[in-house]
Image 1 (cartoon, helix red, strand yellow):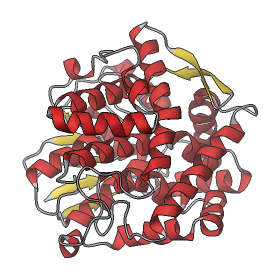
Image 2 (tube, rainbow, N blue to C red):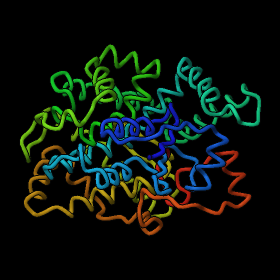
Image 3 (cartoon, helix red, strand yellow):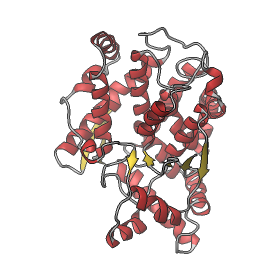
Length: 385
């Protein structure tokens, strides 16, 4: 049986657990402590990140997006990738957007507000850091400072940008409410990878953390209901449920989301990839009249852009033409190809992006992991889970 290692508070742990539940893939759920993460996960994957999966034959898998692709191939029953190639590409695009672009507001709402910060300082210690070799109050303080410096101040969130960060969440709620008020899932009667992309942030962060949860209940009750529906859904029972759009058509309500992708996310991916290509560790990015300064150049997100381009190029000419027309109509075509193809170098370091292999850890690496965890751009550049 698969062994799924999760952190109950984790963005991508919730996504992966929800996906396996929907698929009906049997798994054993494990919540490692900080010490177990260092002793078990770190030596076998090279990362102090969750979720990870150990397969029945002993392999270790990491990173939710490639893991889902791997499971779709290994367990093709109850597919979450649409059969129509246009819908499949658009679903992949929205999954990527939701995974990466909602990360910043999710971390912001958890750590920038006093009530939320106090709750998760306590939960980090009680649920995960209880075997950290320092007194609990000091451990909680260290965890809070690390989150602030890494994911708030270290990710461009200041008094000048916080209103824009909040608008990303509020606008997304509005877009999803419009779809889900009349549809069980984003593409109709059954879930796709796009649903699980949004589920990552909407489940473990926005629907549970005090401040964004209140906003969701007040502004987007259909989204709040969808979170519970997807968590409880049995995909096998929905196999024949109708979709909301014919092949080749843009699903109802997806237009504003695709415009958000074109206006904000794809330009960000290009700026990040260019900074990575040029060897920069930090870069500035202007969006919506706001400038984010000293954002980290993240290799994984350069790879995300590279993968979207590669998936498009792998499609037949007719599908490419349909998608180009759709993306052009929503302002997402030119941003996808701005500056051409920028190699991330990710695949050079990992033949199978989801698979991790045991590593020999030096004393310095163990000390660094003990003090700081593992950063965004070490080794093969897996995203900050």
